[in-house]
Length: 339
Image (cartoon, rainbow, N blue to C red):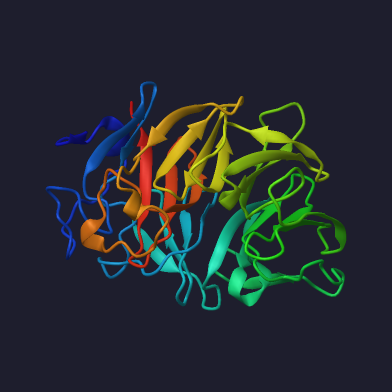
């Protein structure tokens, strides 16, 4: 349902609704969201935010195959494939800057807080490394380092990196060995887990993950994308069990806030799942399966009310959901809870 007047949840953003070249504002078509569309189930409905995430050229953010991160001020950092790499928007979706060069192609982004300062860890998949940088883009650390040693299966295909509450770092080799490596904060290898397969303790593609604090003890929630399933592990990398019903629509990434996991399914939708793994809301579900899981949909065929290939996902501080798609033309979507 498309609204001619913005709901209160979006009006508060003061998002500028100005014209963008190559976008149909009446029908809501293009690489930039231009209409407010209500989506989801009763009690868990969201509204797309028009004009959110307009790049500096007003047209196209460029090719996307990555993730997002937020700082404590609500600024959103989006990974792009081309240099300089990381583009920053304020909490209203206004373009503010690019970070320094050398950070292109970050497949995942994770914000960490150390004292009063915040930093971002990224998995630079083509460079076969993990990079820690500050909020200006200054590189502070690179892993693996001399303390890491040889990793089983190598560093190829690093798709996700998580930092645990105690500082341990987890590598997810979703495009490579299908293994997960646990490292100490200094980079020393602690444990390697998993490998290619469809059974217990195996992954077809451990593509994305999140620290799940909804239970008595913290867990890791893994998106086995091409296995069409999600599973819980302990923080020591021990199998707990499958999360939710299978098969799923290729879960690519997950983020957790409060009672809900927001899951980017690369086959054309975002879902919210409760603690028991039940799907409680489906957002911008695309009925056109030809547009699922592809980065080749042209801008003139992208509709505001339907995802094509959700890839990275993060919750915002006010319950908003930010999504970056796998897309050659680049599309960022902000959804705000309907009040």
